[in-house]
Length: 352
Image (tube, rainbow, N blue to C red):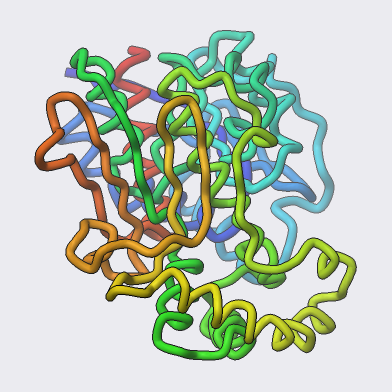
């Protein structure tokens, strides 16, 4: 039996995009034997340049492009003009960026009947019009809410089974999980933030994590899957720093964050009275979404999970006494890329 030929275009050749290319090359034999599938990478596109070939690039060429990007070089000497309309039929457009700049490409791809795989949360957590255009049977977005953890597919299965999802709780940020644990152990907040940045747990600007917006976007995606017609502004988000600190440079913020030590110590103490443990939790239920610091029982699912892991707890009609839980490593470029590859294979099989 001949292999199914699946064209793929990858938007973004950063850490996740490069890991995805390596995964595609390494999995050739498995995909051929298990899925009767060959992924034909017809293009790589980043913010500076693009390379496209409708016949598909050889594995040697793909790995050379990855090596080029790791040296900080563009994919090509200049950015060639390219159009979604010129992509082969049935192409799957894969977004591994963290930018809204890809949205016009994604919307055109959907309008032309192409498939879309998203690791990028921003399009799905943007205006509802984007969600309505992108979130359908010709799309996959597993890695938007926990890297390769099967959070999205589990929720999809629950909904398809006819079960009623009553509430979802999740610790969706390893960064904020680390900071919550440090606060619980009595570490000064400023020192904990700087340690998290030094360990590489935060973005270069830690406020991108401390704002709670990343966790809020993940929660909003889950809420929209439940049918909640909410915008990001409707999510109640507790940031771990005051809004006036947004005007500071990163260096100024890291110097000034020590001024939050005492209020954060008092907040942690208030939430962990009576033996509770501190977590930064998203709660989705009754038409509302909230993300923020909470105290939870040490014996609860959220209380027992390792603080650097992600965990999502589904409270449903059929899983009431013992809620359905997904937990494990919920971040990292390699594990995210593996989840994206799983989505590509799933969608390729659905589209054939």
